[in-house]
Image (cartoon, rainbow, N blue to C red; front, side, top):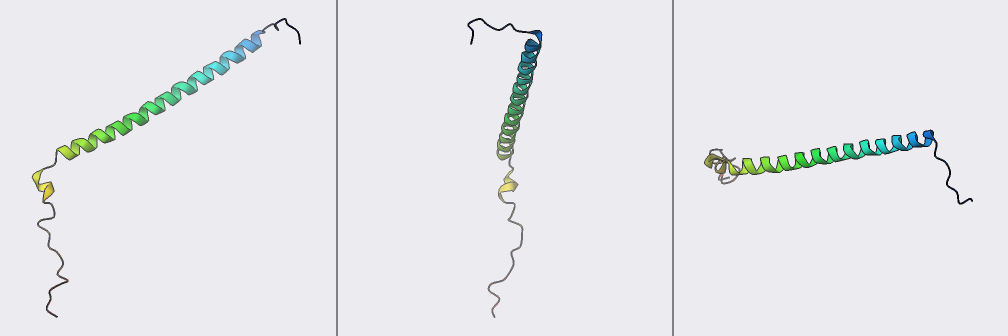
Length: 76
């Protein structure tokens, strides 16, 4: 072990820049995926709230006109 630093070659510098650019690309890609997932989640929540607030009075009574099966009270 010597106390003098080793000289850095051009090959070592290009290797470091390739690694840092690859990590930078991976970082931006993961940020993009996270933003897209957050956008999908927020959009779904906003749509559910919009649909809930825009119900018509007919939605509350949508089952009112349907006949029910007569399985009881047949007098047998």
